[in-house]
Amino acid sequence: METRPRPDQAQLAFDELGTPLRDTTFVVFDLETTGTKPGPDGITEIGAVKVRAGQVLGEFATLVNPGTPIPPQIVELTGITQAMVYDAPRIERVLPAFLEFIAGTVLVAHNSGFDTSFMKAACEGHGYVWPRPTVVCTVKLARRVIPREEARSYRLSSLSMLLGARTRPTHRALDDARATTDVLHALLERVGNLGVHTVEELIDYLPDVTPAQRRKRNLAADLPSRPGVYLFRGPRDEVLYVGTARDLRRRVRTYFTGSESRGRIREMVALAERVDAIECAHSLEAEIRELRLIAAHRPAYNRRSKNPHHGWWISLTDEAFPRLSVVRLPRAGTLGPFRSQADARTAAETLADASGLRTCTQRISATAASGTPCVLAELGRCGAPCAGRQTVADYSPAVEAARGLIAGHDGRPLHLAAARLEEMAERRHYEQAARHRDELAGLVRAVGRAHRQAALASVAELIAAAPDGNGGWELSVIRYGRLASAGVARRGVPPMPVVESLVAAGETVLPGDGPLRGAPGEEVGILLRWLARPGTRLVRTTRPWAEPAAVAGWQSWLARVADARSLEHVAG
Image 1 (spheres, one colour):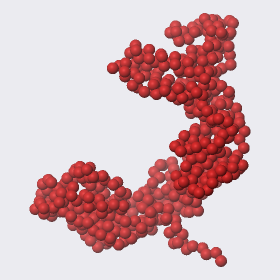
Image 2: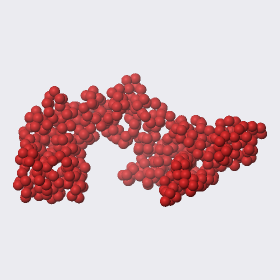
Image 3: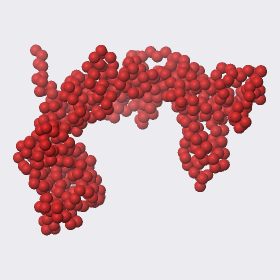
Image 4: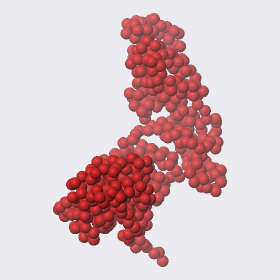
């Protein structure tokens, strides 16, 4: 007979996604100081209470010699006089013991910003490292839990009375820490009724998350704690949002807490009726699946590219005197892809200038040119084929230079452009040189990226393995720039049988047209970043995976033109 878990048992398993509050050790502390400005000195008393599951584990209390006079108004408020702290230890002697007391705990304070700022300043001033613990502020928590009509004030004295604290605050550190402990426990009871059961949920809790949204946490209840892709679906089963996660259940749950502050996403969560999940072998597969799902569903709440197949390309026109044109469809001999039309136009103008191609858009006859030269011809930056000053044969070296750069076997345009950069710098035309440098750097990056992507997309099949961090391997089968199959060989599992099964089950990929063989530029870029990760190894390829030899050399040009110091040596 099947035994169904009780609701409270299911909730306990659900809570294990974070750090349960019942298993968390808190240190509730309070300081008395000589004023309001934090510094290396100025603390007169420290009081702290260590608690877990409602039980007091220990207390820490000491007066501190502040090293400065205590103002009369502070003496009147706290009752701590100069005589009381005369023989007390200085803060540099107290810090080691206090830091040991709070190690591995969650700190709690009433108006925590004040107390932690003094402790940070003391640590910094005396050579200690502040451990940067998780901090809970009971003022903020009370404001989120207790409505204004119930609490006239959120001062510690008012809250301790309202919530029935056993200890009343007295402006002495240990008494105030004890009172804050009682207030904390009362507040935790209230947020527990709202479904906050872990430290992560407590920190993320915000007042503008409605109870209805919090109740939607059950949408994540059946999701696996595995890497993958998640899809929020709306009332008509439409896909609202697609994302990736290393732990699907943990990530999706964060959408129903205050940690999600983006207005558009909170709006999406309010509309969501269901969350679907697709488990993935590793993060690369999840990233690729996310990209493809966004392209397929075009979710309204995803901001990233919804058209990964659509980019901008630079192509030579088919005419007697070719020029560079920005086009949408790639074909053999095009350069790209570029994310925006503006980026493609800038790169085209820089390449045309570097190679000597014309930039006008008129069609020029090969034998009867009769146009009027433009200002670029007067400046010597165009041979004016429109006016018959250049023949097709005279113009062809510029075309071949541009074609050779796009193909990856001719770097002359870059050399000429870099020489012009040096000439501008020597003439002290620094602003013009800086603009030319930035444009040239952008072109070098675009060419290098295009060649790296085209080189990977030209390989019919490439199999790679990356360490998974636990003694195993993340495996990927890449075909013509697309991820065809993914899997994992866990520690102790022979990887090659897994590889063979992935190859056999992998997606069949038919190459398309253009430099990327039809693969989306974004997908090829993601694969290249994964292949470049430290420790990634090639298992085998159907042909050598290699970039044009000139690409490596152009990286030195990139460093030269992209670094502002290339001009500083002239200015100096």
